[in-house]
Length: 248
Image (cartoon, rainbow, N blue to C red; front, side, top):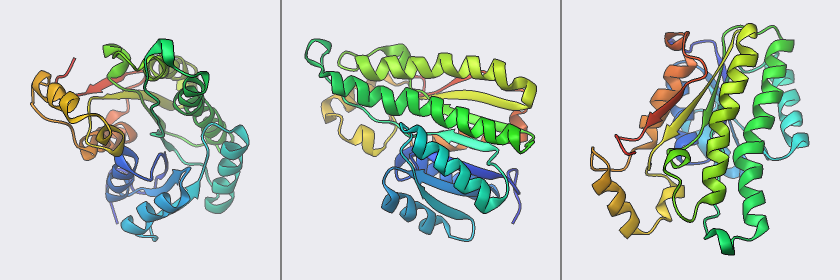
C-alpha cells in the first residue's frame, strides 16, 4: 500500500454516513489507517467493513461527551501505540425550526454536537498528538456554507457552523507551534442523509442558484479533506475553504 497518507492514522467522526463515510473511503484509498467513529456503532462498523478491516476499524463515540471522547482517545492510543495525526470533525446534526418556536433542547442538541463536539475532539486529540510528540498533525473541521447564508429556520445550525470557523482560526494560531494545522471546510448542499430530508422544492431552488446546477457529492468534500490532511497542504492553516459549486 502506498499513497500521500501512507503510514498515517486518521479518525473521522460522523463516519456512519454521508461526508464522514466518504472521507473514510478516500483517506484509506490514500494510504491512511482509518478509525470510523460514530454515535451509531453499527453504522461505523458498516463503514469499516466496506473499506476493509485491515485498514479500517470502528469506534462508538458521543462527541458531545467529554467522558466518551477522552475514553476513545485513550483506547486508540493504547491500541495503536500512537495518536492519530489526522482528525476530521464530520459529526453534525440539524434541528431546524423558526426561532420563535425553537425549543431550547433543539438549540442545545445542535450546539452540543456541532460546536462543543468539535471543541472536545480537537482539544483531546491535539493533547494526545502533543503528548506523543506527533509531527505533521492536521485537524479538519466541517463548517457549512449556511454559516454565511444564514438560512431562515436554521438559527441554531448557522450559529454553530459560524462558531466552527472562528474556533478553527483560534486553534490554528494556538497549535501552529506544535506543527498541527487546523482548517475548516464549508460544504454547500451535498447529497447526504442530512440533505435528503430537505423538501424537494427547496433542493430545486438550490440547484437553480448554484452555478454548477447540482448538489455536491460526499466524495467531492472528502477529496478536499484528504488534500488538507496531506503534506501537499503543508502551508494551509486557519483556512475556511468553500466547496459549494459556487453557491453563495
